[in-house]
Image 1 (cartoon, one colour):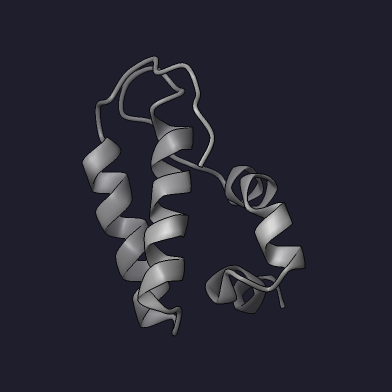
Image 2 (cartoon, rainbow, N blue to C red):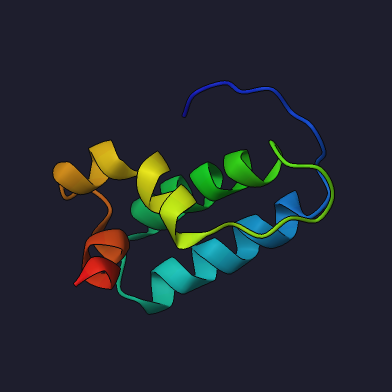
Length: 79
């Protein structure tokens, strides 16, 4: 994924675990789950403190992958 300015790493690990788990139980491949959780953590560390990630933020971040249908969990959740 792309480099970004890190503001605060609080909760980054929790974000990775939660997004990875959500992706796997939703039927994504392990590769997609890892990619999604890494993108989600990238959003989380760009915020101050233990921040939540909105649906809009993750869909915006993953939009190019959704168009290619490489992130199966995101495309399933949109419908």
